[in-house]
Image 1 (cartoon, rainbow, N blue to C red):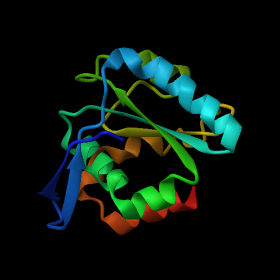
Image 2 (cartoon, one colour; image 1 turned 30 degrees about the vertical axis):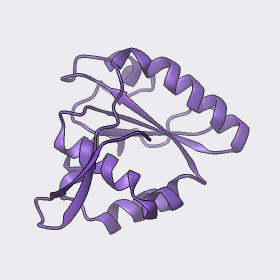
Image 3 (spheres, rainbow, N blue to C red; image 1 turned 135 degrees about the vertical axis):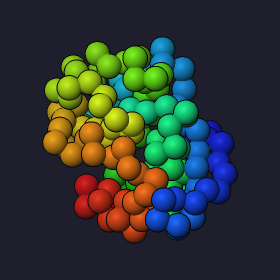
Length: 145
């Protein structure tokens, strides 16, 4: 994932790692297209994570995703794309193209099937409190697919 990681403490007091995986906003379309190509080839789903390296909750979710425990669960099932939205002014058109009403909070976590169909439009914007969620709750959510 190429992310920088560091330890932090969440609002609940539990330690969580942090990472900064969001590349230049200009890469988003190409990164999503490449992930969908891989997903079609291997039957994976695609997680499109709209956020930014400035966002504590985006970094917290990315930090959990970078841990060995999460990698072992995510890698066999998902292609992950980190979409940089700047200060919620970039790549909003991409979110809208999948049926989201922009990016109301970061991170917004959109799950797509291998054909690119959105699977969680109602749930996608609810991740803006990722730093205060427990590792087990986040793990269980994505393990269910």
